[in-house]
Image (cartoon, rainbow, N blue to C red; front, side, top):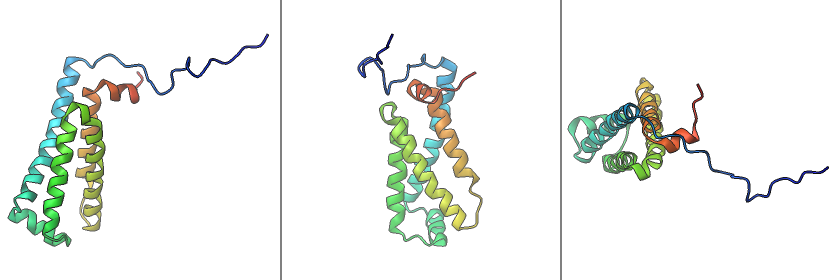
Length: 143
């Protein structure tokens, strides 16, 4: 007796079962954990875009030219906005992670502690995980 393998159409490749929507408490905590790093990014972006004296002093100390503050400020603001909008939240989290990777490198080159940007990155993904059922389906945590 031979069995034929199922046809490719019968196999459901690439789709994970959608987990139930997170509970209300998880969504609230997820949004709080998402808004805090986004506000930090937006505040930093505002300081860079306004060429705040303290921000520019730090830029000069690290060897960045003045005009890079504008570009970095725009990038930080765009990443934060994309992260907060539900349809683009995953893309935003990926971009925020890249942005924070640059912050880690800057801190390492300046011989400073780089723990803060790593913790912010963890909070970004934890917040998104708690508020987005698609991410929960992609990265299931088993009990």
